[in-house]
Length: 351
Ligand code: SF4
Image (cartoon, rainbow, N blue to C red):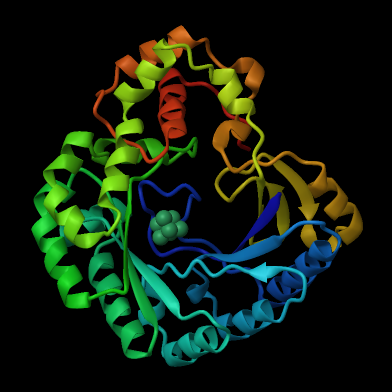
């Protein structure tokens, strides 16, 4: 088992339609509270028999004390600071102390940063719900590179890519990132997720950009293989061949996600998918909290976010999926099931 704590130190500057952590503008966690939460998580981790890590989210670069926070996060003894490195660039590029921030990250061993692109400027801004976001992401990547950081670009696949591939190719050539990741968004039971569905690409769209994909990423063949199993049509076929929904959702998982809100309330479940409140992290007893965590099942997969007794029968799920375009493509086959459950209006355990 591995445990991940998501600490929401500050809100995000965009509201991406596919965001599975419900990111968006939000309050900063007071600095004292951030330091207390990091210290308490380190104490809890000392009692855990397996690896524990935490992530500063949603956009820590919005926090006025981010430099001290990065240094405190790096000084923990029992819990690992996981730096996801992704930034919208909006917070960073408006800060006068950005050189100091990047130095703090690099000094503490984090020298890779990533931006995400959703298409050309028009489509990117539309999908992240913020004008000017595309330009800021590019500016941030150029700036980070100038400070000695390694740059990655995540391409978040959607149906606009068919029209925008040539423009994206030009941007990637100019930026020359060290890594290019190609992501087919999943569908999760978060409230916002249905808003991304009109943008969701099909397997045919992937075929249409094949030449670019092979140029951008080394693992294009694997992406195609995975995509073949992640279409609505592929899941309908699996279910018709007897795949059991309940079995899939009861499969043991080896990762447990928890989140800490800006007011220090600790929840089971990743941010945006919280299922149970455990109380104010600052007042929890470390040993008892570690024991409680050890006795929980993993919740990496969103099967953990439904009541297994209230899942629909397979026939109903197949009928719901048949109402969708069979070619629509998702990263994981589980996502297609979640999409079908959303189509049926199956309630989740999310608070
Ligand atoms: S996907 Fe990331 S950048 Fe977009 S709203 Fe969510 S947290 Fe913010």
